[in-house]
Length: 370
Picture 1 (cartoon, rainbow, N blue to C red):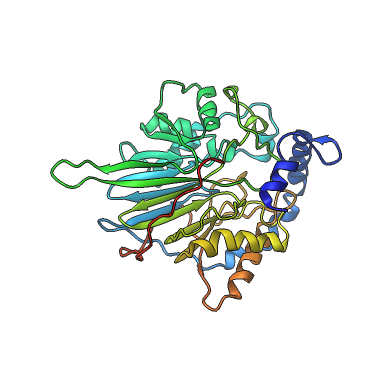
Picture 2 (cartoon, one colour):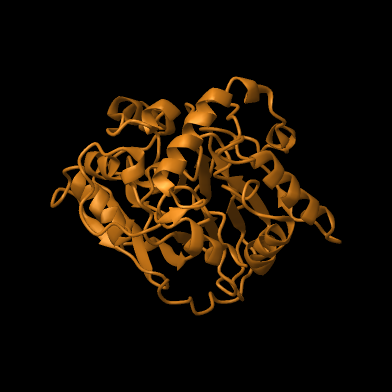
C-alpha cells in the first residue's frame, strides 16, 4: 500500500487506532514524547556522521541556500530571496498540548535578523502545507517584510485567522502551476526572476490531520487546529540552476518523471517511523532516482520542538526515528554503482551552489491538481 493510500485511510483526523480519535492519539504521543525525551537525549544520530557542506559566499549570478531546521530554506541570488516555510517559533511539546499557541514574534524577528532575511530582499514565502511546523510563522513574516505569501487555500485560512486578511499579498497556488518571482526589473538590463513550479505530493503519514481548512483558523490556535490541506513540493529555478524542495516524506508515483535537478532537498519526516523498507525503496526511486540530483540534502529530520541550534537533534520515538530513516536512505545509495552525493547543511550559514549548472532537458509537463 502506498504512503498516500495509508495516509488517506489512517491519518485524516477521523477515527483511528481501534476507534480512538486521532486528536486523542496525538495528545498521548506528545505526552509520551515529553516523558521519554531525557532518556532519548543520547539516541543514535546518523546525521552527525554525515558529511557537512562548508559555509561559502555566493558570487554574482550564483545561488546560495541556508537551512534553518525542518523545511525552512532560504534561497538567495543577486540580492533577492525566496523563503520556504519560514518556521522559527518551534513550540515545545508542552506548548503543543496547549489549546493556544501564538507565533513567537520575538523569536521570529531574531531569526530573520540572524539569517539576513530582510525587506526588500525577501520576495516570496513558499509554504508546503498548513501544519504549524510549516505555516505558523509565514504570514507574520510576509506582513513584516512585504513578501508574497504563496500556498494553498488552507494556508490562506491560517493567515486570515492570524489577522492578516487584506494586509498581505497572498497568492494561492495549485499543483502544476508555475509563477515567476522578480529578482531584477527589465529597465536597462534584461529582467531576471526565480521561476517556481508547484508539485502536489502526498503528505507522509502523520498523527496530525491532513484535511483542508475550510474556515479561518482561530487566532492563536493550538497545534491540533492546524490541518494540512494540499502538500506542495517546489521546483525553484534561477539562471539554469534547479533546486527541488520535497518537504514531506510522501510520494506520488510518476510525479517527477523526466524532471532533472541540481539539488534535491529530501524530506525525511516519518520515513523512519511509518515506512517499511519497501516503502523507503519506493520513496527513494520516485523522488531521488527520478530527479537524478547532483546533491541530496536531507531536511525535515530534526526535532522541531527544540530551538534552532547547531547541532540539531533528530526526531526520535515516539514521534519518529529519523536516524533509521537516514540509515535506510544511505543503504540504498550505497548499492548504486555511482552513489549520489548526500550531505547535510550547516545551520544558519550560507552555502553557495555551483556557478555552472548541468545542462538539463526541459521541465516536463507537471501533474495538475492533487
